[in-house]
Length: 157
Image: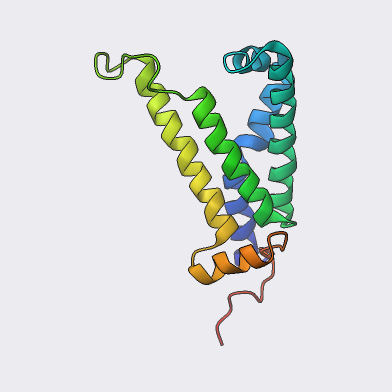
């Protein structure tokens, strides 16, 4: 395995590591706790469906990104997932202690909210690429792979 291939694998692994294995494993090992957290945003039956859907997104989309198969579309789904989870569970504006208490819940939620959005940005970069031309390419072929493990891609002659 060459250095370029190792870097490509490691970068993708770092991008999805939060979801696969950690968050997915947490949902499996503490399913009741995950459902309890989801009940903050939805009734019990819907909360269970949300956790199962989240588990599917985390495992499925992360696997596609790692495999380099439909990876751009999978990254778009994970970007949306990061935004939705930020809006549902990282509502820093709700506790009301942001300005009054430096150690309050709102401060922690504030940073978690922006971390979710930053991670969404990383997935969007994988989805659309670094340039207007690559964004146009995704729009034309949304299920095409970015061919992350093609060693000849990106070589200038």
